[in-house]
Image 1: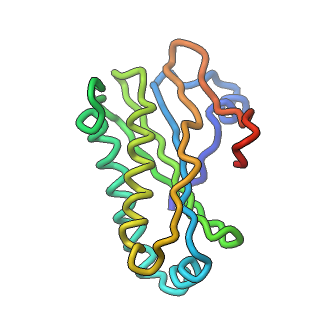
Image 2 (image 1 turned 90 degrees about the vertical axis):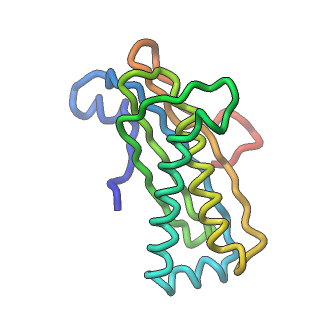
Amino acid sequence: MLDPFYSYEDAAKADGNTLPDTPTAIACGDINLNPQTFAALDDEPLRKSEILATARMSAIHGCKQAGLLLPMHLPARLTDVKIQFDFDAALSRIGVTVRVSSNDADNLEMEALSGVNAALLSIYSALRHHDKTMILTQVHLLEQHDGKSSPFIFANEYENLSL
């Protein structure tokens, strides 16, 4: 399992460094499951690991194929893709966070968002026979750093979003 993500600003403050020069984008999203489906997934660690391994590969593929999926979007040469899964048993929710980096592209938000959606769809596909009530939700850009201008960091300023 990957180490939990933390804000680049938090890391910079802790280390006394500045923000990274490498363009980076971080996006996340959730899939809400039926409580029985979530419990069954917890009871079968091997099946859970297979589903997450497939979702991880789907996320990487989604990041790499953003240029093919989206018209007028030039593909980026990615140097790093990291995927993290978070489990919330109280809400029967699986969260997916994708961080992408590139040395030669500035705007990587489409790659990160495509990766999140691909991972969520992969989880949905694996569990669709058990639960037709799954909801993909809260897909959004968390952070974007292009190394040139001030970074974008998501602030929950909207009344209709409960993150």
